[in-house]
Image (cartoon, rainbow, N blue to C red; front, side):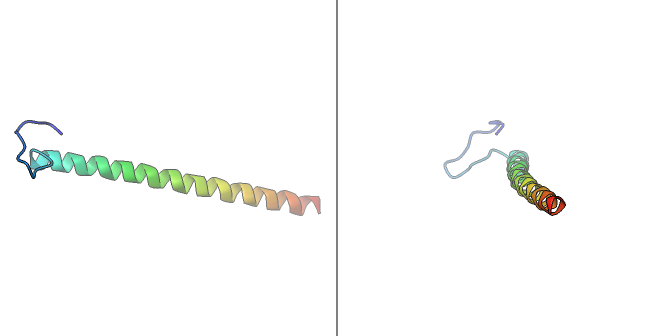
Length: 59
């Protein structure tokens, strides 16, 4: 992340601050993916409701 300290072979981040930053970035990415999925489901539901309403109005 910040490369302030050289990494040892088993390390993936150089400091606790970088670990926290990486965690926040992953959380943000996961939240955005979840929001995209929910948005798609809500749009599908809205289209279904509108189609059903139109069908009822035409009957």
